[in-house]
Image (cartoon, rainbow over all chains, first blue to last red; front, side):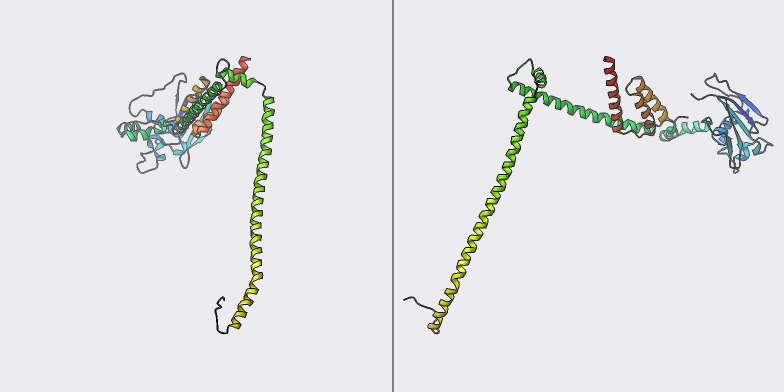
Amino acid sequence: MPPKISKLTLAGFRGATIPTTISFEASKPVVLIFGENGTGKSTIADAFDFICNRSFGSLENFSLGEPAKKHVASLGVKPVDISVILESGGKTWQATMGKNGPVVSPLADLPDARVLRRRTILSLIEAQPKQRFEALKAFIAVPNIEKCEATLRDAVNSMNNAATDLSRAIEQARDDLSKFWIAEGQPGVDAMVWATSESAKDISKLQEIVDSIDAVMRIYHKVETALLALDAAVGEQSTADEALSVAERRRKLARVSPTATKRRSAQTAAGGKKLFHTRP
Amino acid sequence: MKTPDEEVAERIVEQLRTARLLSESGIRKLYPSLVAGNLKAEDWKLLFEISRANSEDADATQNQ
């Protein structure tokens, strides 16, 4: 918990025409300042705004056409002579009026002050519900926590789905195990006990057999591949033989053709214009 | 003054610590991410898994 404010000293600030120091009891959880109109309650609140928020407080929106800084100083006091000193947790801060507004020194660890004014409360009461929420949003909205809550919900749903899938897989594995157990003649007390004892057995010899079978299977696949290659080669050989046979026949035909041509020429010469020869 | 996000994040972290649902290192990582709102579903899962692993290790040590 941050340290409580112990002292506030005003000089030349609004209604504090003479330097005024207000001490607060640190042991009290709440400090209530009350008094008649014009006794300086708003001046104290404005002093907190001045030093903690570098604001002109209640004068911020009532400049009457002039800069608010002109009205912050007490009557007869120059703005440069304004001083607000705050003490808290053994530290001291001082605010004065600079060229562009309040200047605070030092700025480090400056207490945070929120001032809720009557007009703010009234406007809140008179506002529509949506506007009320907008006004209070800065105090109650937790958008980042809501984002994280949504992703947490996603994570929970995703983990629930994964758990459901795993449960189904376990159920399926139990069913399969039960079938194996029945197929084996239901040895032992139950399927799980049987499976546990079976899985505890030395399977190195069985592994050797499996390895041998794997080796045989590998050789088998090689042979199978070689046979396929042989089949392909035989097919190619057959195609080549057929092509050779066709070529041979064509070659023979080509050898016979010149003789037939000569015979036709001779017949044409013997018969004059006779184009057709009738067989006797 | 703390923001509402910071206030709620502090309470969440404190309740997780009290319920021992997250490890101290997980809690330390969780707080800034909660405040910034950048925790993804995968981050939550990782936090749970790390915490569960730590919890199982602690149980095993106790049993020994």
